[in-house]
Amino acid sequence: MIDEKTLNYLLSAKKNVMLIVSDDVFSDYIFNLTTMSRGHIGLISKKFPFLSNLSIVENICLGLMYVQNISLRRCINKIYVYIQYLEMEDCLWLRKEQVSEEQLVKAYFLRCIANGNSVIFMDSPKRKWIRIVTDCIEKTQSNQNIWISTSSVNKGLYNDFNFDVIEISV
Image (cartoon, rainbow, N blue to C red; front, side, top):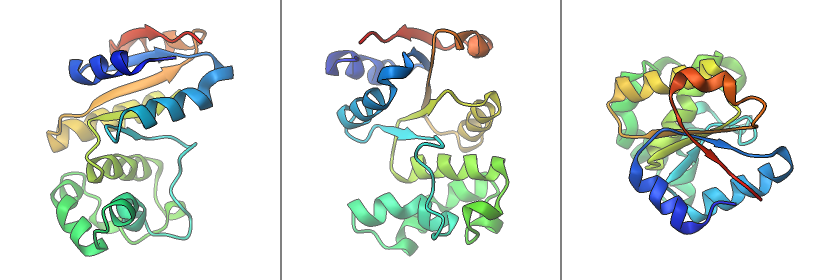
């Protein structure tokens, strides 16, 4: 597992990172990593989906509304410029089932923006998702780094992204 000292180093290094993790420790690892990060790591993952009974914008703002007691309107105002950069105005009030895959990934990215996450973490993502998030970072000129996790068998799928590789042992 990654210890707090290593995590703090990685957060301060501001690099894109590929973490090689064995499948049997993945769930514990993700919980450990996000808990120790104290809000620095945001998740883009099918394992942490949007709620079906909320609109896209309600899902994006849910963390701020719940944790910081910020109104939906105030949260939208806080991130509206990013919504515009990503051309997401037309789908804000739709449900996750009504948007394209690209719009959904952009919405997950906006959730990370809203929560002030400096790292965007994706577990074994589709290559397309990495490209979408990379484009979002460029369009919004935000300072997030991308961290992905995968197994040692699949690490070759991501070689062309030039992530720093870190093997995580149990």
